[in-house]
Amino acid sequence: MIFDAVDVIRTKRDGGSLSPEQIDWAVDAYTQGTIAEEQMASLAMAILLRGMTRAEVARWTDAMIRSGERMDWSRLSRPTTDKHSTGGVGDKITLPLAPTVAACGAAVPQLSGRGLGHTGGTLDKLESIPGWRASLSNEEMLDVLAKAGAVVCAAGSGLAPADRKLYALRDVTGTVESIPLIASSIMSKKIAEGTGALVLDVKAGSGAFMKNADDARELARTMVGIGTDHGVRTVALLTAMDTPLGRAVGNAVEVTESVEVLAGGGPSDVVELTVALAREMLAAADLTGGKDPAEALRDGSAMDAWRLMITAQGGDPDAALPTPNESHDVLAPESGVLSRLDAYGVGVAAWRLGAGRARKEDPVSHAAGITLHAKPGDTVREGQPLLTLHADSADRFERALEALEGAYEVGGEPERLPLIIDRIA
Ligand code: URA
Image (cartoon, rainbow, N blue to C red):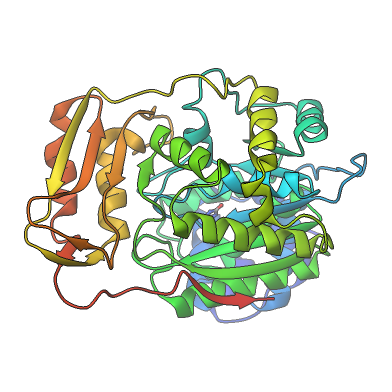
């Protein structure tokens, strides 16, 4: 069926619902280039302003999935389960999580992305490991999954091409912040990835897409609805992103911290979230009663799976990671309790140090980042280092320090969200 793009735009602009046929046509025609960029921009803005019903979001997601390939892991002997995080500062959880879940008997086929803006990307972090390759063919992915039980690699261009095109358009037309569009964008890629079960880590707080828990909850509910409507067992945890996760923000520093977690140590918040998400992933894949994720971190089996996963993608798990040329300490201005350490401020500072990119073509510095010496609730002494900034050159520090102005506070009551705010199933 062929529609007039202007009629479709008018329907949404005036608050109506798009029919399944209109949605299928709009997504397909845009992918093929029949609908002009300005028409899709207008439709995206109408969706942002008017919203979508659950049926519309499900159909829109479905049309984006059908724009490309849907991967198939039925040749594997283990059930597949994956996690998606909406992105945060210091969020390295995939690194310890994927091998932990593999060590407990599931297969984790994770297609991941690079960072843009103040939140880091999993692939950028893993690329600090010498030799590690993010781009794999489907056959190579299957091979790594069969060997290691987990694979984390870049999504190929055949996966949800409609989303790739639409996301680039939303980025330059002020239409990213629409819950139906964010939810369908994320879920189209995760469903096309072919996972049987999915756990969403939806972040709330200054360092997240969704600044408050109510918006994060609505996004989580929308995504859980889409997953369920597509036969993927989907659960969401709403988690705190008011302060960075763990004590390392950047690329190589986050790999080092993840390896500490896999060795049975590491910061308590990273361990707690890794174990909570791993248990949800196993339960969603009907793998309960086997090895517990906390045990896999203690007994070395998660570390064994990590080493297999890194080696299978060309990386050397024993190689030294890049180190920074320059470091700069930020000192506590007075003695007392660190009451606030703002995730957004720290994320922007790490980005300006070179850990992130401003445009998607830019390279990242693997050595750049921030080490946190205290977390909210810790007592600090005046003059003690609170943070250490790392960069390839000292001229990065000034702008990073500007981002940290007002981002931390000593004295007063610590303001913290609970690490796990809610669970939505
Ligand atoms: N991540 C995505 O993949 N899509 C969005 O729309 C937002 C974040």
